[in-house]
Length: 114
Length: 112
Figure (cartoon, chains in turn yellow, red):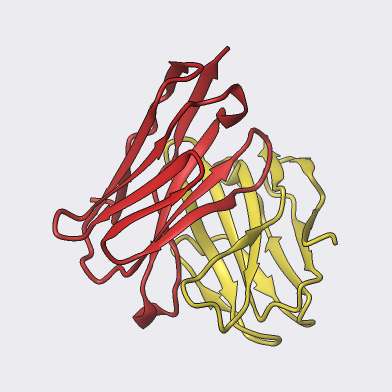
């Protein structure tokens, strides 16, 4: 059982380049999330989706775009990368009917922007 | 002010010691309280959750919630080197669809 899979696991970009992070889950979860984790800041929500074809902004959405064309996939895009976007990105998912919001996380994607 | 405050540590203890972790929060509407454990270079995974005030025990782990003080704690008894990880508190409420608010995480090292 793969759970939540993120690709790529590591990436180095130059300022201004674009890239897409892919998240795939095989648990048939309705909700999917993208977080970034920085030292001392904890996990901050970038964007999330409550179902196929839907997306919504989180706490720190600027500079990122997302798409949820298929229920099992959630893509995070950086159109013009900036050094401030150097971070570890985590995708997470959960059932809509979960009683308290337990999230299942991927292993993370480490992005460095030079 | 952050909605959830957690001392990032780091915390270093000898094997067998009791580890005490805590978080404070500002929004009294939170109803569900969780602790996630994150090993180095891995994603967080749920360790324990509690609903409203009270204690919950699971093996060597005890979670406490004091809603009147807006304070939650996690205790690890007889700590082991395998407990070395970052521990993140998280909380949610029904009226915003259980969107989690996380603390910054406390990094714990248990020395053999």
